[in-house]
Image (cartoon, rainbow, N blue to C red; front, top):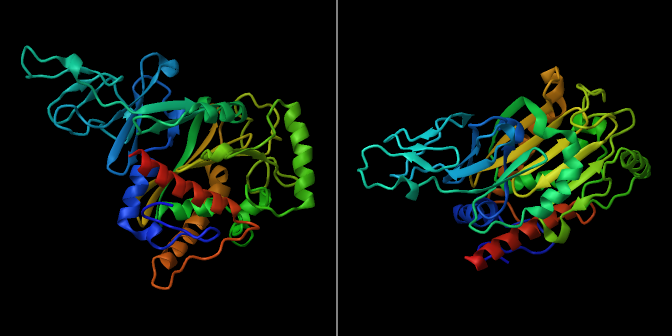
Length: 398
């Protein structure tokens, strides 16, 4: 167990795990700074100089496409001038030919090397200075960064994700809708909520139109209708060349990738089940179910044939989490954006209300850790085990 948090197996975390500023600081240093974090989409970085920024506590990372078009290398840098430390990115996202420090006009190339530094004297060696690099990877249209000096191996995740999400064509998509939320809850309450569907039937009418409330990893309930739908769907998916088997946190890894069937009459997670746009990527049949992706600690996503939606968490403080939802469609698709966002906008906003109520109770004097259901909350248990193990491993490494 962590030196900061202890837990009785089968029970939720103690109050301090969600509310204590020291625990929050440890979360940033030991969990977020040591893991691969979802940063954004290849579709946002589709030309040289296109960049986005990612905040991780006190750190800000710039991710930018280098020279060579969309095929150019991605670079990631700490947003810290090598002179006296000023931020250099002009906005949260945009496009530049170079990064120019607004303080003293040091100029950095897209790859982070220092191009010029005025008034530093004739003997100043620009080649000795650069923006501090950050590890960056992209796979299947998703971009990840890691602040650690020795990042975890990214290969197994990419090898699992690419054949499953790659056919959906996110790398060649466009973001049709972007939503931002500020949620008054600790980031772990949002992940816990995502890891169970105990609450779905009573809280998510739009989601429940198209989705079964079983099939979540760690939910041991059986449903003959779901089992028949899954078996039949996997036969169809195999015929389309889509891997049907799930990848469920292999060896304690922080990711899951699973393709699940939708209810009868639904080809997409839309209000009426009808696709809103043509199939994305190399998909030709709209009957591909819904591919679910989670990458701890800050990403979950659903990819249907016609659209995908990603959810990115950014902790702000112990009691606050920023959330960004992005809805992606084929680059050339014309789509009703309200209809596109209807299911996941409603479902997400319902979840934020639940999480805020949950956190308000956790932060109160009456809170005590409660028992987790072995029937429907085993994935919450697995997340808490991973979280505590990650705290401990990072502490040991430090």
